[in-house]
Image 1: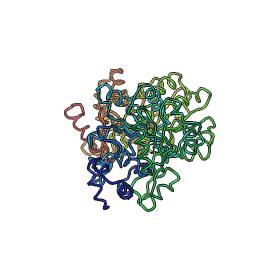
Image 2: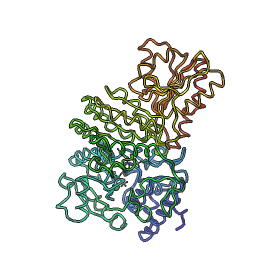
Image 3: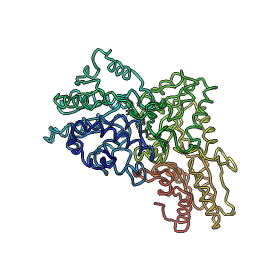
Image 4: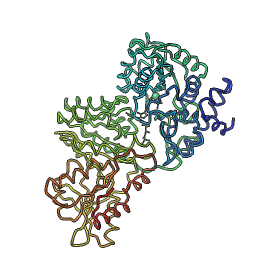
Length: 593
Ligand SMILES: Cc1ncc(C[n+]2csc(CCOP(=O)(O)OP(=O)(O)O)c2C)c(N)n1
Ligand SMILES: CC(=O)[C@@H](O)[C@H](O)COP(=O)(O)O
Ligand SMILES: [Mg+2]
């Protein structure tokens, strides 16, 4: 079949109409299509190559969208999108106004869960099934497709506990077991799956819970998959279909990639899986080097990751101090609470997560770490606008929620040198928690300060005697602020640019510095309705400083996917926009948007 046959698969009905003997060719076509398209745009290659046959089987046995098919995490939903009429859109995968890399309700009625945070599918399934039954629609099936990694998340077990006794007659859990998250899946559950795969297990833990269990099923054998799904449909009670797949199946560079089976790639050579352009050192690289250096002299430092050891930069630390790094699986709540235990026992835990995933453990941050004033450092990679992964991945919540946590201090480095320095300051804090946030970006050039006053870096001093504007830059926003200062100075506006380095709690000197200017403009790569700017405005009010404060940051909205730089500019966080907003606020004194 030619690739354009895929575009004929406008509805799942088309794949159901295909004769079974044409399915292997379709699977091969889809696999070739995925390699061709994803290597050009970037995206989740390994996970989707692993579910080609599974997704075909699902759409042949279940009637989406009448039957609800819920993909956990959603990074493995490309085949689902191809089979629901979106093959032609892959040319703009994860690009602004292009196809989302996750299910999208705006794209299709076949898509249900847009949230890319793992371990939610079984809870959705339970809820869907309950309301289908309440509404007399109990003929509708609900299918949750969850990876073995996702199943290491506690929310799955909360859901299974409920599913087991809810009396659902048409709920199927498809466990896509490829023995990996990024790296090999960890813990007792992974061991249990290994024994089930090898036939050494005395029954499945699912059966112990009261669920039916079918498997292990070869996840690349279309006939075996079809038979298992048909049997699960007839079971009349919640059934786990344990499907065994290979991440990256059918594409040797993916299968061979020891790091993570080309889990998430940029633009790569399809024949090698390697980036087509050299990649500059990232913030993650800088962190990885520095934490490994810190580990040499700080025996009390223990690092934790939630199934993302390499992506968060812990590979070097792990190879040098394997006894002091813990991968807890996709279990951020456990990571933070375990870190509270570690700190109680005298360690200084460093919890390394993407900013957006810390949301999941906010209660543990507040009530287990901060309440006990424990020395835990949270390293928040992917803070601010991330880009291609879209609304549930932008790290735009941490700088708005963490400042309200009593005793927690938040640092935002503006460059690599700042990251190294602030990381060391953070792990030296022993009377409470700290957090340090940095973006998904190349580390760029260091930005020197002209002076450091009370721990605040002065990056630019106004050339005029009368100081007009104080620009307060949070972390990487130092670059746009200096660009704005140059633009404004050229117009005769005196601008001071400062970088507080620690953005929460507000530095006590800042309100006094504000009092010496006509206007304060704060700029942050985070939610402006609760971040540094709002905190500073409140501190100025508390100090009876009348200087107006304008906060530039990300709006209280879910931001679309796209390129980080383009999104920052679209939301007014580039130099030109900062200058424009400042000029407007100076002249007409209106609040920024
Ligand atoms: C709460 C949360 N933490 C971390 C991640 C990052 N993440 C995305 S996919 C993935 C691995 C998923 O493994 P699995 O569920 O087995 O799916 P596979 O990629 O193997 O198909 C992780 C850790 C996430 N999406 N959500
Ligand atoms: C699905 C998921 O959460 C991860 O795979 C994420 O997409 C990786 O993001 P980065 O590519 O920024 O590491
Ligand atoms: Mg997996």
